[in-house]
Structure formats: C-alpha cells, structure tokens
Amino acid sequence: MDVQRDECSDRREIHEVVLTYARGIDRLDFDLVRSVYHPDAVDHHTGFEGGVDEYLAWVEPLLRRRARDGGGTMHMLGNHLVELHGDIAISETYGTSVHWGEPADDRRMNFTSGVRFIDRMERRHGRWAIAERWAAREWTRSDAGRMMPKEAAGPSGGSGADDPLIRLQRSVRGEGVTA
Image (cartoon, rainbow, N blue to C red; front, side, top):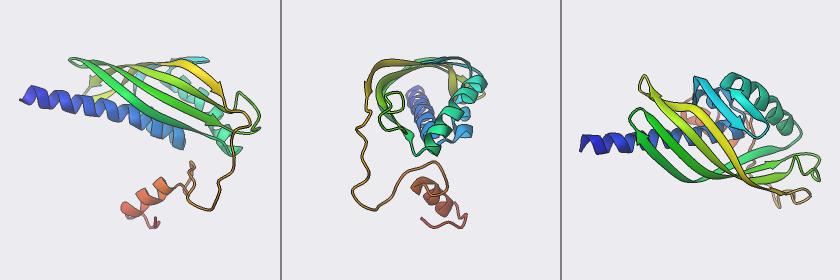
C-alpha cells in the first residue's frame, strides 16, 4: 500500500512541476520557471538548445517584449503521462500554446502551436524537477489578424501586480492587497 501511495505522490508532484512551468512562463515569473528545473538541466525548444540559465536568458526578453507591447502567452496542458523508474521519470504532456502580440497581423507574433513537453524528471534530495526537456512542436497555426478586444469590462490577465492571481495570493497571504 505504501508503494502505491508513493507512486501516486510522485505522479502528482511531477504533474505540479509541469503546471508550475506553464504558470511561470505565462505570468512572466522567471524565478518560478527556474524552480522547476534542476540547476544543470538542459532545455530543447524551437530556436534554442542549452542549459536552464541560458534558456531563461533567451526566453525572458522575448516574453517581456511581447508583454510590454500588450501581448502574452497562454499554455493549456492536457494529456499527461508519467513512467516512473525509481528516482527518474519520463513525463509526456500534450498542450496548446497560444502567443499573441503586436503587430496583430504578424504571423510570428500571433500563433497557436500544438506542443508536447517531453521531460526527463529526476528526484534529487527529495524534489522532482526537470533534468532535460524537449518542447516538441507538433503543429503551428497563424492567428495573425484574428485577435479582437474584449466585449465588455471585466478582469484581465497580466504579468504584474494587477493580475487577479497575484492580487488573490497577496490577499490570502495577508500582504495588504484585496482581491
């Protein structure tokens, strides 16, 4: 029974690593992104291959520039399978990555991709994290010219202090900001 409970816990922790990456990337919280990798991790993305420090140095300015111009990203994660091999695991996560930005008719700024995150996860010192990641792009569709403004006032996402998540977190943690 304990082995089954540990396996379930490992799977849940590995899934949290994948979800945390998506939150960090989409909210531009690069400390959070860094936290899902082991320090010596390697990342393979379209247009990039290298260590985690180099990956963050590459991706952060791209995403900050996109956000500064009113754009962003949203990663929606779906199917998630894990093969456990002791303190090593293979994690495969299917997802959709939406990217938008200015100019609105630029295909390289406005696109949606089908992606699989294929991760070698390792448990080191009791913590699961990415040791190596392949962000395998399965397909890409241009969304140029397809974005439209919101139809009415209401909450909007972002990467700063006004994001509803950040406001809620600060409120719950007693940091003086109301949700």
